[in-house]
Image 1 (cartoon, rainbow, N blue to C red):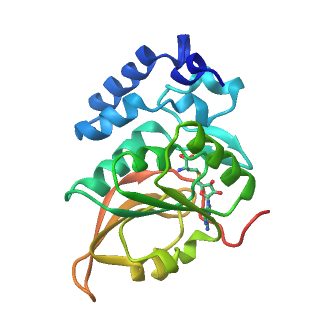
Image 2: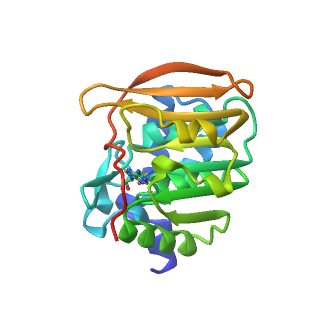
Length: 222
Ligand code: SAH
């Protein structure tokens, strides 16, 4: 990929990206550092070239294996919620997918640990991080419902696929003061939740808004 393709031209240009950011603002995203990072991140390199002209529409798009790259609004919203209590150092992401959300996070926190159950998606995401020269991301091919215990505890955990219930393993890997942002529910009725670990034993949950994510599945795919 040459420099022009990376920066984007026409439907993938900086100007197109700025329009997306304006839309996110209109929809209520207020965190300026999140908006700046979205403005500076080429979403078109996270999807198939055949779909790249749609990269800056505010919509989820297919990335293969029945999975989708999340809608920019929800990426921005979840990031804003994760960061809204102050700077965050170590973040676990469950569901690397295209790597777009991972890339946004990596520009805003010290270190991102991201797990993905489908190996070919993980491989592609890894190539994109190296193309963008982003080096504070560690990846693991595993079932993220289990978290990544060896690397925890985490100040933030972001889950980008929906389980029916919050996995207890993720609660256990949250640092005291840490924040978990997670869609919860079945295919028809999902809520975005924020769980804060207030003390060693107390968790506070708030329900934020209705969302639509692919399901969190168990096991791995080679
Ligand atoms: N943040 C990604 C979202 C991709 S969709 C993006 O914006 O591109 C959700 C991803 O979660 C899919 O790639 C899916 O394979 C992955 N996933 C689902 N269940 C998982 C699990 N138990 N462990 C790890 N990844 C999982």
